[in-house]
Image 1 (cartoon, rainbow, N blue to C red):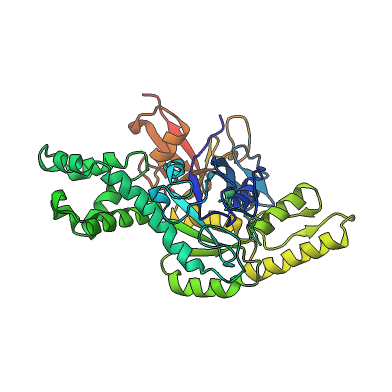
Image 2 (cartoon, protein in one colour):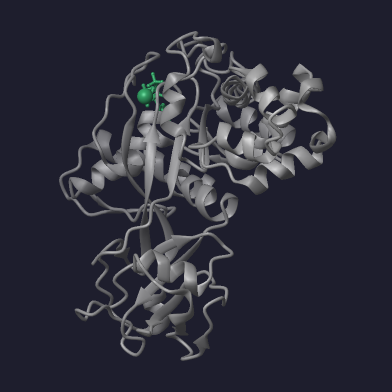
Length: 406
Ligand SMILES: Nc1nc2c(ncn2[C@@H]2O[C@H](COP(=O)(O)OP(=O)(O)OP(=O)(O)O)[C@@H](O)[C@H]2O)c(=O)[nH]1
Ligand SMILES: [Mg+2]
């Protein structure tokens, strides 16, 4: 059995900023990319990868990955990417393509907001002179759109909600939790948001618009955190904007400089055996003898960019979303703790992504569908140490799960 984990990352932004280019580069799936708004209408869903240093090097073994890929000692772990239509200001009220498609992002616990850092598109995504639109406006409006989408979800029959809490005496937490069900929001995130704003003590019937918006925007920050992909950094006008944006909102968001365009070019060149490129590296090697002068020049321009910014940023944006913002850890489950193999002898076959507070039991649940808590223990395959059912796991741990039949 190949173990699958299923972290979803939503790709959002106004039209024409490079969402589909980012998606295509990260997944190598051919999708429609064009220099005008609303190229994407139906969402694209595909598998992208986050990258970690593989433990195969530390352990001195040659691995046989099955649910993931290992290239030169780097393990690429699959995550699900969702590329949706562009959002324009007022989408929550139905402008542009509206916000129905945000429903496709329901299960995504983290979003990558692709921003045109070159300011080469206006607020609706139409091409303008580079440097003429302020990307700070885009950052502001997008979080507001997502917030308003959630506000609508909450307030669509507000009176009924109030009656449920104040007359039928249903606990507020439960009512709110049900209302946002399907958004992957936890009760803890709801109660945190309520508590921080002192709304847990305020009767629902007395909540004003500001209370509702304040509560939802806090809940959005906790439940749909955003990483900013500062895209189109290859356009000269982008650099000043980038510096300014980092200064203004760098404390609030993680901002990763990217060129989705360059990443896509590199992956295509690698696929065509023109270059050797490990996604996420800050360099590549030309391996074809038959490049034209123009191809060589284009590649050298990309290389300069990569040296300056530490790569194209696409893998970095995904890694930041999954490891830094969601705080996930990558675990290698094995069946044989001495040889690090599955039951068929594959060395370090799988990697699963789990929340940072995951325990031996959580890992057991991913691997086996039905298990009894008391029957589970683990072994740290690297040290041979035994782990109890509630022992916390750690990033890049190699773990054998034991299930004793009662
Ligand atoms: N210079 C530059 N152009 C880019 C970059 N990424 C995307 N583009 C270009 O921007 C235009 C829009 O790209 P798409 O990927 O279709 O944008 P989108 O955000 O999916 O657009 P919609 O689907 O219409 O919302 C295309 O012409 C891309 O080639 C980048 O990093 N640098
Ligand atoms: Mg698109």
